[in-house]
Amino acid sequence: MDLSLENRDGLPEALRVLLADFPREAWEQDPNFRGLVEFWLSKHMEFRRLLTAMNGETESLLDGGSAQTFAGRISRYGSMFVNNLHGHHQIEDMHYFPRLSQMDERLEHGFELLDGDHKSLDGLLAGFVDSANNTLQKLDDPIVLRNAAGTFHSDLGRLDRLIQRHLDDEEDLIVPVILKFGEGSLA
Image (cartoon, helix red, strand yellow):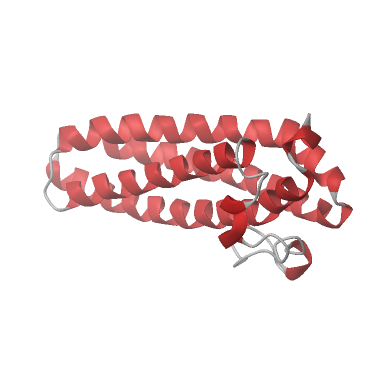
């Protein structure tokens, strides 16, 4: 079974073992939700909001919106997105994944999978930066800009789909572990 980020449509059942005991709809009512889980999910929501904002700005440009507004917002949102996502992944890879994988040995492969996602996403983020920069370099020619923005929009859509897949899978694996064992077990 190909579990690469590009080809999977969710975690296999063997990695969703704790999700049955800790379903998404009950997370906020769990006593271990406040604190780390809530903060961590808010970071994921920030990435989702930035992707939505960049999609909206690109669609606005394609619909005839201001190139200068597009440039300013894509530069700001894109920089926040890439820098914050890289930092988030570094903390997960260096601190959380090693500790969380020890809490339930059945999930070790899941943390390896998420680590592999991070490596795949590094390449996708580099491509995103290149695509954004290429588009921003075309501001002086409306026709060339429109074509570049169309390509950027397509690239952004692919990145959005893969980021959503990764975030959903990461949440389905990690949140139940922290809810079960508590955030104190990560210290």
